[in-house]
Length: 405
Ligand code: NDP
Image 1 (spheres, rainbow, N blue to C red):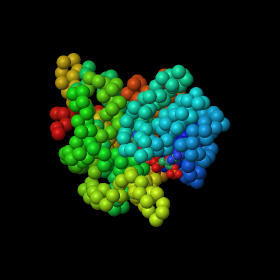
Image 2: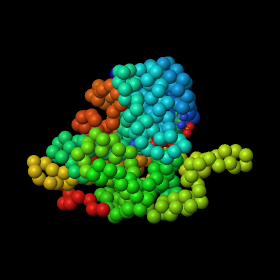
Image 3: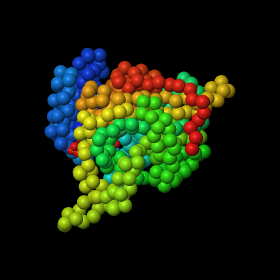
Image 4: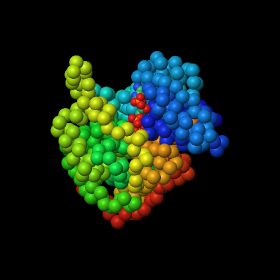
């Protein structure tokens, strides 16, 4: 039984902590205690109150600025967790990894590092810690959310059980939920808008193919949602999957957006509100995108009004025993059910549950190693089993043809 230190107190953290507490309450392990620390301590206290009410489990709370490596190091030394679960923002990945190195503590997150002044999603900064983590004898598990995370596990589960070789992979992320707001994002608005407005990039025959943001779309009929426009985008798991499964000739990522969302985004972009360049306003320096985040609804506040389902999965085409086939693995998650169970909407739920599962597998020693690892480097079976047991059941089906362009 082990103690974890969770950093960050947004929607994802709330779901992960509720799920860890459910396991503590059941006594089945591997969690013994959870300490939750974030920049705004009142948000930790709100989560702890909800967890207490729903599960009866007490969560210790505290304040931390995770950008401050010395303060993070001191907190880890005081709490003595077996694992630090970083559910703050991607900007905090490196300072928290530094504090884990200083205290020789295992590390886990759900999103790759990105410098605050440069919208650039790349694993290179975190992969650079490989030797230091190895030499310290500790593990870093990167990207244990849904995408990245479950989508990477789905891919290597398909490879392990259904293919001798995967040739093409499409990752399909559909949020069919309606939150009743004119414009809001389902996870941190700053990260979400930086991701959506970046140029699209996919991997094909050993090279990156770049296209303007949102320039390729196709209609797909998502089960439990219906027909939706989905757009080609860059997403971080493409980089790790093409590195760890180099046989895959083409990897693409698609996300659905409604017309109203895109129209709002276009206007905000045209007027400069999505810029990450600092500007001077009434004698103060502000970043337009950070200001925009401040006026948009908090993702965690959307839970109560969000109705509908998410549907996220992967479609792989490849060969087994000389026969070509296409398989589709996916999970459908209800926003209403997620809210009823944890007080959070489905996007936080589909990320927080895999965060809890990744942490559980590291703590139980089912996933172990020294160095920096992505999800697809471990055995997918125990993760797939836990998805079914902890609220994100999946299905696999054969498709008649691969996804077109
Ligand atoms: P939120 O913005 O709701 O929450 C982020 C939390 O981190 C807030 O509590 C915030 O504190 C805290 N925080 C920010 N900066 C610091 C700091 N310097 N020190 C301590 N705490 C800090 O985000 P989400 O819960 O929606 O997302 C959490 C993470 O999950 C993000 O990294 C996101 O990119 C990732 N994610 C991954 C997905 C996946 O499928 N892999 C999908 C969705 C999200 P404060 O309240 O004070 O601002």
